[in-house]
Length: 390
Image (tube, rainbow, N blue to C red):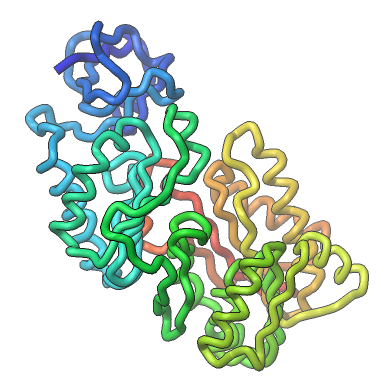
């Protein structure tokens, strides 16, 4: 096994269990070690740290797969890891639609596997894990015997690893337009054209959290995508629900989802720039009992944190002004570089500028099939907050 030697003096992050090794932490790389290969990471004094895959073209040169020197990285390794991840989900009750593998949180860096009924969607987002894709697919066939497997590697992050964007079948072809069930509702999902892997599974538990505040309410949902929060509000007894999204395709699918569940009489979905609508309706002094904000990520790197903070403050300020006194704001952030404390600070800043007081009802993160691992910041990316606006 070829080796990568760390610098003599480095922080405790890698030694303490973090799976990423950056280029500036490395002293020496063995000759003949090619990008995508598996290598042992050693301290400068020769102690074994871990074993992982290498890409010298990436800012993260090594992503560690195992800390056990006796554990080989082979087909059996990936079968064990995926089985272990699946056992965890089943133990918690996630069996029908869930994230089966969540990258670093399941000790399989940059591997995403989502389960929709009997179909699986995978993403291999780094060169080292992409090399093992055939082995991973074989393991999935053995563990799940799925009806179909689809690859959604049409994401720009792969280009940072020297990989092309691509998508397609990793099994016999099947109809990628399926229907899933969540919390008693049905949703159309397009595994080929939908965002990410086709559907946002990470909010499935949070959507139940609006049950009581939605009953009898006039509800506004901004950045509604395919209407999942909005249809939950209607199911939970909202009097009227309006959803906003800039995507014509998303609005069309949201309307289809409303019809699918017999809720189209109380739900309307509008194709509009939500930022513009929130601003205009604030000036018009329109009001709702519940305002829900579920925007896309505003920043993917630390260099864009200021932009993200500005965006989150703006939409939450507008959202609070649109809530009737005593009503509720439901707000989310999926930007991993904006950590929970900063997100809550932004909400407080927005409340001060809106001259509204907030009473926290509930604070949550992503559903437990997307587990948060302490010390791995990128695994704690979703923030979900319900507040009463006084």
